[in-house]
Amino acid sequence: MENRKANILIVDDEKGLRIGTQRLLQDEGYLVDTAENGASGIKLALEKDFDLAIIDLKMPDFDGLEVLRVIKASKPNTVCFIATAYASYETAIQSTRLGSFGYIPKPFTPEELISQVELGIKQRKLIVDSEKLKKERDENLLEIASEKSRLNTIVKSISDGVLVVNRVGEIVFYNYAALKYLNISELKIGNRAESKLPKKILDLVNKILSSDKILLKTFTLQLELLPENQLVVEAACTPVPHPDGSILGVAIIISNITQFKQIEHIKSQFVSMVAHELKTPLAAVQGFLNILLDDSIETDKEKEKDYLNRSITRLNGLKDLVNDLLDISRMELKTKIREIEEIHLQQVVQNSIQMLEFEIAKKKISVAITLEKELPVIKADVNEISRMITNLVSNAVKYNCEGGKIFIDASAKNNYVWIRIKDSGIGMKPEEKSRLFTEFYRIKNEKTRGISGTGLGLTIVKRIVDSYHGKIEVESEFGTGTAFTVYLPINTN
Amino acid sequence: MTLIAVIDDDPDILDASSMVLKSKGYKVITANNPSDGFKIVKEKKPDLIILDVMMDEPDDGFFLAQKFRKEKISTPILMYTSVSKALGLDFGKNEMVPVDDFVEKPISPDELVKKVEALLHKTKEKK
Image (cartoon, rainbow over the protein chains, first blue to last red):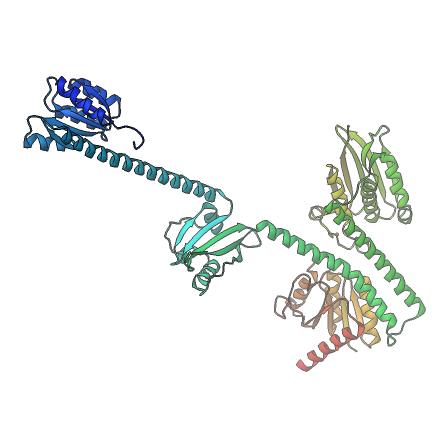
């Protein structure tokens, strides 16, 4: 409005007055429209948004007050004047009630009119400015509201729990994940923290709230919410500082660390098992060497030799174990470089039998090999496939009876090549079968006593099979024998 | 003559321990599994039992020790362990683990003998 001319509407049935006023105001720099009766005055006023309107009170068609009412109803910000030669106290009050800004008695001098119009324009300016401010404020509020709701949506949808406690110990913010992890079924903003939070978290929150100086530091603690590592969460509590240096409250982030805990547990179990497996042969060897060194213990030459031989055997076992462990760790880290080539299973099986010739002959075991003539070639690392078959055949020898049998069959079916290694050995009980592929698991009973092994052979087999996207099946009957069947996918490209 | 029963599934440990104990003048009987172990203790009534914690199963030794106590066999038990520290097991001398002392394997002959003598001495004093 500051940069444009104000526009004014004059509604009057008296032509002379209408035109005179128009000219006067135009000379003052205003844009002026005129209407010769009430109806066209209303029409014009509603079409355009006038800054100001001067309405004659007495017109043939409409009463000026009626024109004022209609204009004010739809254009409340148009500043209106009532002009009349019949000024009375009642019409003055009535026109003010209907929203008229002023009352101009006729006849008027140009100065009187102009000073009234100037006042009206000032008023219009105030109205427009305040409208503008109001609109701006509303827009800002809207922005804040949508920002707040966006932030809310984000915080509510994250998978970590978020909870804020203010300095008097009330819960002032939370998301659904927090309820889930802390197993709270009902929580309202303003609830007391001590009635809702686990004691350990509460103690930490109170410690932070009551500390003299703010340490902008996060304090964490772990909570086992369900026993045996079924649900473990970590609560990270951080003070929320006020600009004046005091503490406004504490923000608590709750994350689910169950999986980490479970992995940690598996890892420490594995380490213990490895330690035990390594230490047992060491203890035996150390025991023998201590005896040999101890002058107070009498031994003969034969016994000494026996102890040394047994020490060597244990050390060999230890070496095998370390090699198996290294293989497993290489497989896990996938650092082992594979040399993929075309493999003929016949050859791998023959080589494995050759490697175990001595053990097979010692136990007088007969081996029957039935391989399909046109076995498809598989693409794999020959060392891994031969390790897999050797481990299985070696088990078939170790857990066989004197004079027992081993059957090795292989064929192709659909997308797989399968190879079965079956023995007539001691077999397994169902509960033993289920733990077969676990690291260091070795079946121990009267029949397996004296059979040496690292307890990692089948673990390695399983990992090799898995790495080629194959599968392994076990059939076994206690006292009768065991059959392992490995399926390897045929690589068609 | 003092009789000691050694129960361990590792034949090398059995032999080495027997050798050490025999050289110190003890009489030794051995078993390489829990059921034989129970039998020799019941029949021969040794003065001391040396028992390995892990036999067929990781806690076979504990079960056997508990079985002895249930059967009112109060012979002192010295338990062989190899990974109690690694497993984080911190046994106390309570009813759950009714043994009198622990030895961490491997152990030197001197240490083994010292432990055995101490335990036998303690039992004598009690009587």
